[in-house]
Amino acid sequence: MEQNLLKQAELKTTKKRQLLLFLLQKQTHPATAEELHEMAKSILPINLSTVYRTLNALTEKGILIRSIRQDGKAYYAIAKKDHAHHLLCNHCGKVIPIDTCPLSELEEKLEETTGFRITGHSLEFTGLCPQCLKEATDKNMKAE
Amino acid sequence: MEQNLLKQAELKTTKKRQLLLFLLQKQTHPATAEELHEMAKSILPINLSTVYRTLNALTEKGILIRSIRQDGKAYYAIAKKDHAHHLLCNHCGKVIPIDTCPLSELEEKLEETTGFRITGHSLEFTGLCPQCLKEATDKNMKAE
DNA sequence: TTACATGCAAATACTTTGCATATAA
DNA sequence: TTATATGCAAAGTATTTGCATGTAA
Image (cartoon, rainbow over all chains, first blue to last red; front, side, top):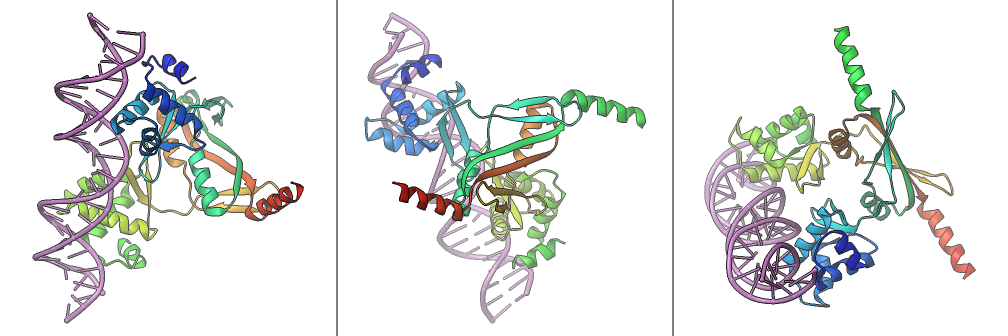
């Protein structure tokens, strides 16, 4: 499994990379480089630089998602594509999907601060798509 | 105006703090400590530490909002309380307001990457409020 | 064999802090 | 006058990088 992901990313299969991917797959929440390093080095010797380099490589290949939280640290998780939001054009009704969801982190924080158990969310942006924006702009220019 | 905010925060009114608040009020987008320092020092001599200390103090007092972006830097803006989202309980219908909106930064990024002009958004979390969560948990425990 | 992975130490970027001096209240 | 603000230099934290060595393909 870890091997598939590494081949898919065109990265050499090494014990350390396999271990990091294995640990990431076990996590229920995103983890920091330092946390992963702590977990990994109790299993085999590994340098923190290697952890950072591996996480960067996997993030660049799209295998991982990195998000910087309000504590200023980077958190890593296996990328999953099962969640989507979209942009909705007020004028022509066009819908443009967004490939990331910025809310999981916020949800965790809200659960902590409010005691609310969050099970879902809805999020929609409205505005003008590039074409309608251009039309609107052209119209305004004529009107001037 | 800057003076009012400082008095409200129980901080001494100094030229440097007034200047930083003045600059923050002029911004259309959140700014970093370094950006504010660049702007400020062209007007009067000010140390970067002073900028950081001032921004921290004002953030702690709730005068400013700080958000850490994906570039790992802290961005500061005058706090405004004109925008709200809420948590909606699936069970009892209770509504709990959330006092921050995490989306302005995301909107900027989406505008850049999609060319979409975003003019608004809707966001709603659903789940169970603390009371309903407790009831649900109690019920499950009896059932076991 | 050879290009890529790793360890180690040093460097970087952003932010914080200790201490002496300056200034608002 | 006195508590707080500031400058300066040093330290802290998360992350990156150069270089020599190790290892998967």
